[in-house]
Length: 194
Image 1 (spheres, rainbow, N blue to C red):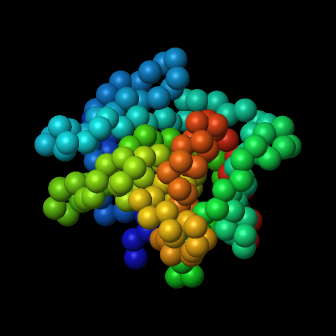
Image 2: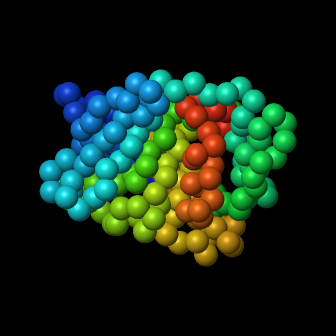
């Protein structure tokens, strides 16, 4: 069973963003000032898709910042210096594909994540706010082939309903995930409680 996932893997010398059964070749260079990899879709998708920016473990998190998700409330919060700076509704994993509980750390941050089928090689869905992952991805957990993240969605009514319909990821309204994305760094703790 596939879960919504996004990960960066190395295939030869070309890193790939992988989302479930989809993969996107990336090209770009590491920006030493911010630790963000400027990445562009390769091949024909490059012309149609905006560039994706990927940040990996080279950015340090501030220990006073935390993402806290309470699954029973279907609510995510940004905590800084012990104070709630933001609180938003979310979609969580369906009963058959639950969102994992525990304490994790932000592993990746991606602007404009893109689906590319590993079977057909075709880009699946739109890119950006109307794409299946919205325009921001905050990856926090990897187990085997499954990666879990907090991301946007083009289907805000599911967020408003606080539904349990995802494949394990946490979906937020695009405007909310953008605020969270901008407030956290690689290494920020992600605490998920039942």
